[in-house]
Length: 128
Image (cartoon, rainbow, N blue to C red; front, side, top):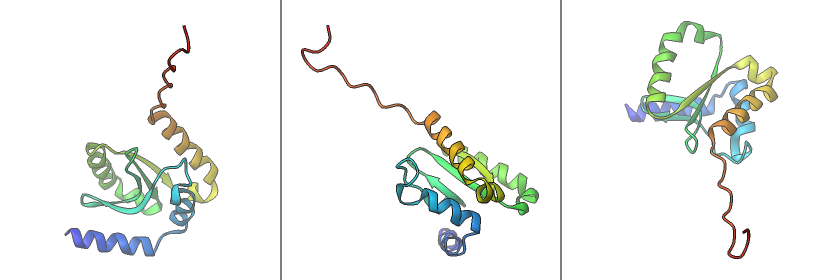
């Protein structure tokens, strides 16, 4: 089963949709907020469109066919949340026509979830 999932993930990476290609260009190579995203990554028995393991974020892109798969998506999202992931979903047309808005929503989510770095401690002799 694992090998079948890995083979399916490889095929999905080869045959990305236009929306996946568009978002991947923005997320790859640490371009988005310095985060490392992977595409078509197997997680358990599922394949996530995009995942950042560092912050536990799964980004899913949905086309019109997803309307018929809402029960499956809920089950899948519940499993992913049970594994510690947060799932954000966007429609393909949102990514293609409103890329900046999608990236802004992702940025806001990351900033909300990512802890701020601690303030540096004062050096000896500084402060009162």
